[in-house]
Length: 98
Image (tube, rainbow, N blue to C red; front, side):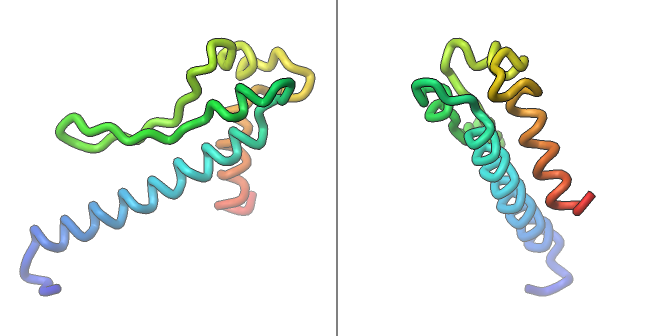
């Protein structure tokens, strides 16, 4: 790659950033799945990483189980702090070793 081609440099940087962000989203998804309370396993199986394209690609972690919001608010004794925030915090601590 020539340093005189700014478009190629920018494309390379964008591709690299997207790859790293996708890794972060997959890891948060994994941690959320692991931190989800299990009675039947339905809520735990509901976690997904989805990519949408509306001109630009957007990555979203979701869980369409109707009661996931209640679980994420800490309604379960198995996960009294919720699911998503502890997953993000766990990744942050691991990444920055804090």
